[in-house]
Amino acid sequence: MTALILALIAGAVVGLTLGALGGGGSVLAVPALIYLLGFTPAAATTASLIIVTATSLTALYAHARAGRVRWKAGAAFAAAGILPAAAAGAASTHLPQAVLTLAFAATAILAAVHMLRPTDTARPGSGDLRPGKAAGAGAGLGTLTGLLGVGGGFLAVPALVTVLAFDMEAAIGTSLLVITANSLASLATRSGAAVSLDWTLIGPFIATAILGAWDGKRMAAKVSGPRLQRIFAMALLAVALFMLADAMT
Image (cartoon, rainbow, N blue to C red; front, top):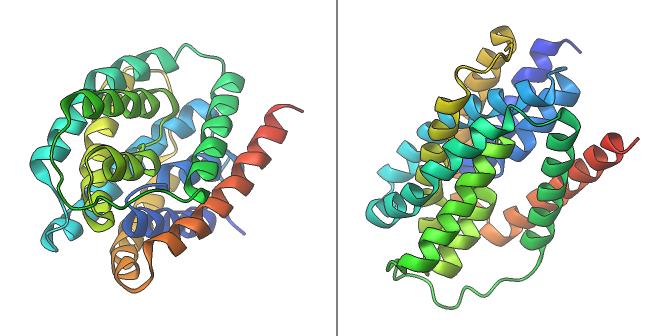
């Protein structure tokens, strides 16, 4: 199977995940870029941010049209992560690639385990800001985005549900706003880094990811959020364990 076909397939999966769950696309994009398309970890994290930014914007538009984005609360949450994302993005260019791979795998495992655990969503709907908790969660997500090249949506959704008491639909839509802001901030600091990117693969990857995001949004309306989350978490755990084993051998 050629690299181009692999890029098209991987892009569709990433887009479906982002559109359906409001996150998780980047934690699949990074290993796909490394193990399927031959990118270095440094190039993969940068390319992932480009892919996730473009795809998140598309998915954000779709969810906004459906009235599932809480703009005021989402903007405040995202603002707390912009500076940490920029600083972590600059720092990541100086870290050994093995460290980035191990850190990414460990983060993905923790995220998968968290998603498999039952969560308390008994207080949905208000979306009221809790400044201290929202700022802390937003800053943490920004740091993760900048350092590992992940949008942070797989953590943003549960954070929006538990910290800001969003219902699941609003959390998924609003997380895309957070992902986009953090990814752009991190990309801004990586723009001068000497990382070679293969645009003949990134371009098709983005194209199918954008198309997949629209299908993912429709999927979210038909399949329950918890079921989608469990399926994704199992796939993420398998990928993360493979990356961890590979990095340690």
